[in-house]
Image (cartoon, rainbow, N blue to C red; front, side, top):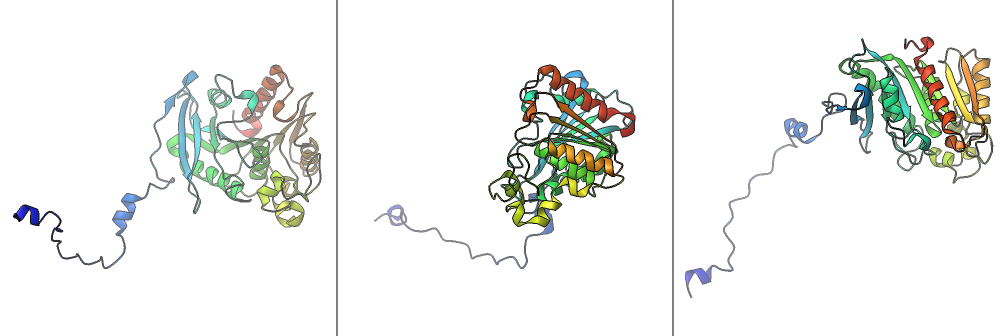
Amino acid sequence: MSGAGAGAGASLPLSPSAPEPASGPSPELLGLIGTPHPDVAPLPPATPCASGVKLLRGVPYAVPEGGRPLELDLWLPPAAAEGPVPVVLCVHGGAWRRGRREDIGFRMREWNPGPFARLAASGVAVASADYRLSGEATFPAPLDDLRAALRWLGLRSGELGLDTARTVVWGESAGGHLASLLALTVTDPAPVGAVVWYGPSDLTTPRGGFDPHSDASPEALLLGAAPADVPEAARAASPVAHVRTGAPPFLLVHGERDTMVSRSHSEELAARLRESGVPVELRYVPGADHGWYGASDAQVEDVFQRSLRFVRSPSRGAE
């Protein structure tokens, strides 16, 4: 038998085993493997858009323990803007269960330029942020996430040219609910105004089709149980329970024929704000259901322009 044939099935000799490391991974290795923390991570390059607006898409702002990285898109006004610019934090809807950060309602999905680009072209920066949905984590997780977004914007404001002391929160439907809570509870930086489109304000009382004893409603999925079974949590998640003297001004806009979120949510929130001396404007959209369904294009444009004027009004410090 030849030497080649004899060794065909033989294993190659191995070197003696190296000793196991005496300790865990080195800090240097851990630092190289892990992605940079959002507080210090480099910002992505900006994409030029219409009217000189720049877009930074998919910027990580927080990484909840055990969860996915949370991101925001940032729309910056034209470079001609002088000094730090005010900020609008936009919060998407979707019954706390779904939704996308780039969406502020189906009636504006086909706008070109889109609503965020239009806001930025007017001279305000726009941050549209992710938050954990109810299938990922229950309340107060989404509120905590949006507070983290405000914190991140304040932390990186210098390099982004933002004046976060002039931040307005703007949300629709479930996002309006969260925007209300951001404006009414302890948040840093504190918003100076809130635009709320057809947002729930009370998770404790039957209204329209909402039954607080149901464990299958969007509100129950947000809380992790039927609101009636967790009254303290339901109250904590209800903007009407947090109205306080000194809260920032509110613009509430609701469809007169809303079949998904009763307009009484906006009516009661407005009444409590007035009782506390908080400036509030309540507007109805005649003939409109949820999401401005049934409203004319002119009505939707009017709602947007009215909201933009509120954001830019002198009482918000934006002009």
